Image 1 (cartoon, rainbow, N blue to C red):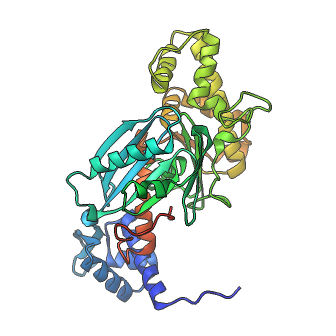
Image 2: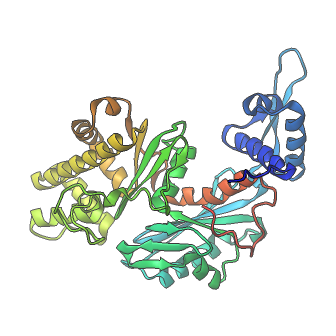
Image 3: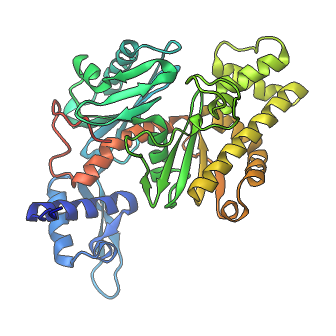
Length: 409
């Protein structure tokens, strides 16, 4: 295969991307520090940062004393350069959030969804949420909208969402949103992967090169990060941890298979076991309220305590599989059900993982809770247009509203 020739334009974009990314994740930094950290010459750093400053992508952030010379000017990415929106399409609701470029949250709205929502209903709630968070902001300042979805995302000329647990089969989500009037650049990815990116950038995964970020809610998924990059597989469906088999011939999962991990640690599977053991319905008007009732009952109910202990055991065994397969340095548990379980049962989960994992890789792995709470999926979704901005070196401010940039993720 012939090698691709590197052009001056490619080199310029690379240098801009390198310096912009370094400032975004590690700034504020001086030009001298940027040269040392990136290996670029002082002249290149000076020229590129001058360009970025003229474009108002970066700004000065004070000064720091230098060794025997004039104080050095510190630079950082300017939060006011633009805005990004993050959308979490969950199984029970839609959350839409607006951020500045430094990921300071500026607005949040939530809309409920019926169980197994049809695509049209989800699109209606997303567009309504976007209108609400954009109220008072200039649309021209919005760099893009990231969307986390409860299923596999097939990237290409048409972005298709495959989410069998909610009845979505090859749903052209981007096209539907564009037809509904959304003209901003759109970026779509699996919700577990957007949560994973958020925790790796800003949360409990920060600083790790090899990690697994687990999402446990109604469904179960994971983002597998190897050498700092999310592993996607041949068609971007890697990370469907919830549909790995934990019990041969076991409980039927919503996906139709038997013995999936999701059927044992997903909120619906846990509540189904509790209802069966209890012999009656669990109090609470929705799944999250019922799950809270189960957790609260454990202090005085042997049945509830036994169901939760079993759940911690299944979760620990599932984590052990991740440890044995991927040898991560860190495993982060997130998702609304995962955080609730972890807050109450993390020592038991770690114990169960140690009982099922190989001793040496387990000893090299930390297991902890996510630090971004229930906003992690939406926050991670909002990082998708930011990641594209950094990768492109902001040579065109991503893309103007109305352009098609929907296959990035």
